[in-house]
Amino acid sequence: MESLFIALNTVLPLFLMMALGYVVKLTGLLNEGSARQVNKLIFKTFLPLLVFINVYDSDLQEGVRSSLLLFSVAGVLIQFLAALVLVLLTEPENARRGVMLQGMFRSNFVLYGIPISMSLFGSEAAGMASLLIAVIIPMFNALAVLALEMFNGQKPNLWQVLKGIVTNPLILASAAGILCNYFSFRLPGVVYSTASTLGGVATPLAFVVLGASLNFGETGSRVRSLFLTLLMKLILFPAAFLGAAILMGFRGAELVVLLSLFGSPIAVSSFTMAQQMGGDGQLAGQLVIFSSVLSIGTMFLLIWGLNYFAFF
Image (tube, rainbow, N blue to C red; front, top):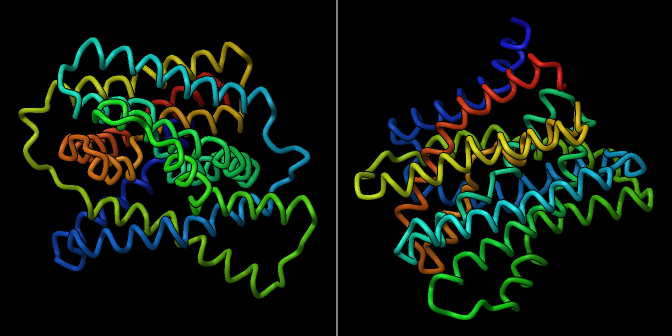
């Protein structure tokens, strides 16, 4: 029963924030255009501040163990390669192939990693997740560009990939936090408290906007693509990589960070990227929506199961 309450207390707040966002949308307080603008504000201002503060407050000497870092990087690459083989074998349309490939390996680790880690293990795990973000997000961005350009008939543009990585606000925030932490640069109290308060807005506002973005439109012609991508992203890949992590001895806060990395739904930004790079935008949008809703159940089951069997 304790495991059940831990899982509920972790996942239920995320669900309620998304539900509030959907209600806000129904009332007309947020339309599609305004939701996009608020989302842009979150990902360029509030979320970078949250990442910066978590890295700034982290103990870099403890940091992220090399084994956790290597497992995470290897896991993402293996997901990408396995998903690539799968879409080549099962999907004939190139516009859908790139979107499905991106959906299978690219998780919303930025949005889910910190709150879930914080909820279960406090600042220790949240700092660990923030440091891992500095490595995983560039990987996600680079592989997502490769996935979409691979199937749009054009040669991948290495310069655009590198530019997207080095100008990503989350990467810049992580780098700034690491530099301040490493060189023991202390922010003035008023600056720290302001940045901390604004960073605290990121998670609740992001989930409210995500809920306001839900749109359960026509899915009939894409059911097979949706089902296969969601099956891999929310069930098979998390089960495989978390199982491997347990066998390799990961426990506690490290396992929670891996849970957030491999068990989170598809990244919201994958929809925008698919639209801009010639992918099936409607399929990308539906994948974000359904993975976000269904992940409430799958994340609950994963957290409950791992806690019940005393893996954290």
